[in-house]
Amino acid sequence: MRIVMIGSGYVGLVSGACLADFGHHVCCVDKDASKIEALHQGRIPIFEPGLDELVAKNVAAGQLQFSLDLIEALPNADAVFIAVGTPSRRGDGHADLSYVYAAAREMAPHLDAGTVVVTKSTVPVGTGDEVERIIREAAPDLSFSVASNPEFLREGAAIEDFKRPDRVVIGVNDDHAADVLREIYRPLLGNETRLLAMSRRAAELTKYAANAFLATKISFINEIADLCERVGADVQNVAKGIGLDSRIGARFLQPGPGYGGSCFPKDTLALLKTAQDYEAPLRIVEAVVASNDGRKRSMGRKVIHALNGQSQGKTVALLGLTFKANTDDMRDSPALAIVRTLQDGGVAVRAYDPEGMEQAANVLDDVTYCGDAYEAMEGADAAVIVTEWDAFRALDFQRAGTALNDKLLVDLRNLYDRADVERHGFRYVAVGR
Ligand code: UDX
Picture 1 (cartoon, rainbow, N blue to C red):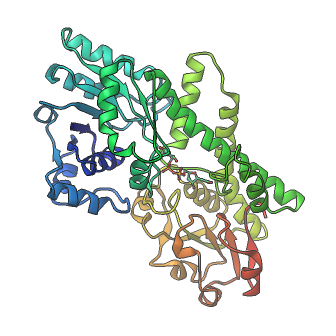
Picture 2 (picture 1 turned 90 degrees about the vertical axis):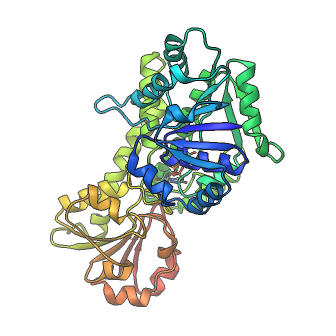
Picture 3 (picture 1 turned 30 degrees about the vertical axis):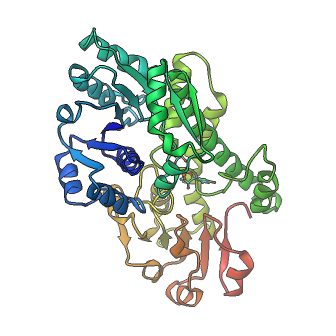
């Protein structure tokens, strides 16, 4: 199949490279000249494990190309994927669809008959209808299809998620679109992957419902963790105790500082807007959003509490800043609220993150960035694990104890065993234990 991928950001690049690896001919297009130039030179503008090798291999094999010019890429395409950004619109939380619609407008006069236009970006219910309307307006006599094919990629594990998905969801309103998408995903269908064909609107909603449900699981266990602290129970036991029930499932029950990233915060808000527009309130999701927002700042207060409530003039070493490990992404990271809460309390913040410091420096002021965890702990009154990077899973307590003023470890990801930490003379504060 010949595929054009509009948008060479995170989703577009991962999807484009994986589809090329399946044996399709893929051209990834982007309007950002510096991005395309970098890709031509073999530099990957994002951090995603394995992506550079995958891109290099498929470029060398002639399966994957990059271009600034959409119109030049379109002829003979079987499918055109739209994988542009859909940020939260300032002010109202609605997903901003201007890039999606601009792509539809631009391609419309140049599409070949039979092309399937596929929205891969996370878009609210009804976006496919609008894309179809825009193309139809510009090309009234063209036969074309518009489909939805939401992605379920986790940053840091995106290639694995693309190549070994639990399911592929395709939202199609005609047989031709279903046939083309089946052919595109054929390499996956030999193994366990299920391909679910449904209406376009159902597929669009599936993406939001999946993310909102996962966010709900996380917020649920986070609130149970708070209760565990009060009643004297270990939330890790409780999470395991409920997660082994296959009706509940063990994943996404890891308590922590609250969910962040480019998807859950934005998608839950956008889903609430849709629910409002259609007058079908989603009270559970409303509660999840409020709970998670409150949690991020409360984690800063938790650190201050661990400092015996005396924060003025103290110094804290933050280990990890990104919203999760194996990414450089700072979007909606709990670290942002934690740093601000600490600074409001008069705490000086030192920090180390293996990948995220460059991005953190764009959004956080007055933080001292350090070369490693021990440098961050130098002269600090506590070490606080914010992100579950492997580098923080086996800290050298001897070195940490020498670097720190006070042997205090606040572990917001529950990476450690309490007895093990206390054996080294540290005070240990975790989440829900
Ligand atoms: C998510 C979805 O998993 C993916 O399917 C979707 O397409 C995009 O959004 P991503 O944002 O990359 O992916 O990260 P994910 O691994 O899902 O984690 C999201 C947030 O939840 C992180 O802040 C993470 O730390 C937090 N989280 C996750 C928990 O606090 N506990 C958990 O058990 C799982």
